Length: 322
Image 1 (cartoon, rainbow, N blue to C red):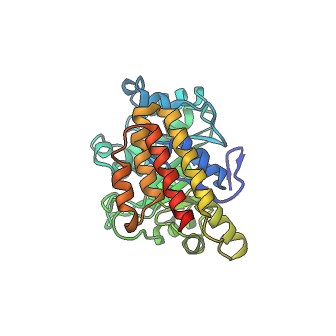
Image 2 (image 1 turned 90 degrees about the vertical axis):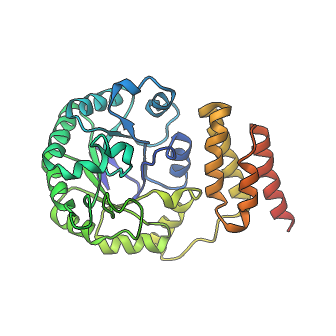
């Protein structure tokens, strides 16, 4: 798939997820075969840029792969300015968020709330595309409620405004993350525009990836929650798409190395206090099984880097001995 001048090596993209797709996670997914990873959402409000969180999200030092940065907001001028600033900081692609269903985003009439206002959608897209010389992409949902799926209309506006590719999550804003993603709207969008369309939602296995590509005719897949604690899902999906066969489950030795590397990179990025807290949720995803609840409960009480790393090491040592 081509996005502006950038030819992706395959059809697999890491979805932007606030509090998840930081640089350590993005680099890990890229190493395991993702063609591109979109950054965490950045507010277009410059008043919040002078914070540790925003500075970390706007920094691309040590970044692997194509640097795609997602921005969110409802004011065309602020969105255009945010795009310019992030390109100056090293963004190679600007992605616009019109898919986030979170209340704190939608209260500001940003994210998926914008799908209710096609006129404002057009104004934002035109402003951002005109402001930068890099490709601008867009992420949306199928509409704002099941009875108001206007994804095709929004997609056509996006194409007319010069959007380079469009990612579509197969739920409406009202659906949040409940129920099952539906792919008929994505299929209809693909039939009605000529720009690349990326399907997103509930892609958690290689078989589901194949199904969604076949069902929608999409040019690529965007994987979010399916990669939490499973960065190797991109390797598994790519192998399945190429061969029709499933890879063997990841070996425990490899899982140990990946987890420890991930934790150390979190500590390096956020410092000990914040890194320890970010590590808790990632370890929970890596070990998300009922029989491991006691481990997670104890791990979440640990307060030092050394304790966390030692507990992970002991966990895998015990598995190796059994």
